Image (spheres, rainbow, N blue to C red):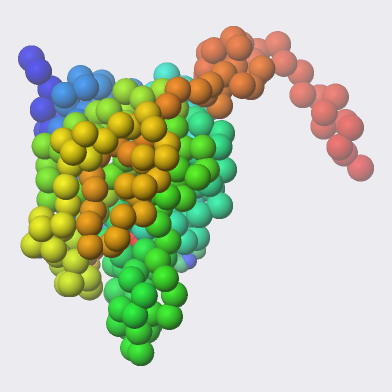
Length: 288
Ligand SMILES: Cc1ncc(C[n+]2csc(CCOP(=O)(O)OP(=O)(O)O)c2C)c(N)n1
Ligand code: SF4
């Protein structure tokens, strides 16, 4: 029997997002992608940070872990290194990923562990009631910026392209078929795959709703973009903000983090025989 999104759905409760939240689209796209990839739920790990979107593992029947704000990527990297036979998805909001978790994001890109990083980019801190985030537009008003945001936004796509990310993609939570395919491509990619998702927050980012993105997104691949060309990718990434290309900006192949580390030559750590390892000398060396 072919798998369906239900096979990845927790029986313990339903999402508590606001009606119409873009996180519903991301959740369904992830589940459809997993089903179409025919992933065994017992071989999938979903790790998140803290935020509205980061509640995601609660609604999945796969292995899941909600960590700390900004810490999805390092925890997912650790889990992946321990058992890199799992399909590892890290998931976070834009505040999580590009604010407090920015350092982890940059270092993961240059290390290239084999995982998918899905960022629900709604340009606000949703869970804490709509404060501006690192991707909020300059001048936008919110509870933390009643006179307008003084800072220009981070461009996560340009940042990823400039920092060794081996798969750089952007999707839109309101275009499910496209997002499903993008997540499947990201999963099939060997290396660290960023999927930044334009995600309407219907409660606190009303200016960037479904109509806004519907009008301004266009499909990179349908427009003939060459995803192997880094200069073309950067040009697309810095297009004026009134356009939002979605699809794969860039993809290349290079060694995985686990391929670079001698500890993994014998396979995933979970399969190593540790029964004959004696840690007593280590304790003796470090005891006072
Ligand atoms: C170390 C730490 N700082 C701040 C917070 C408070 N906090 C929780 S979620 C959040 C921001 C959520 O925004 P985002 O990551 O964009 O996700 P969204 O809720 O929009 O999905 C903040 C600041 C926290 N939980 N931990
Ligand atoms: S506050 Fe925004 S991001 Fe959070 S659940 Fe509501 S619509 Fe979604």
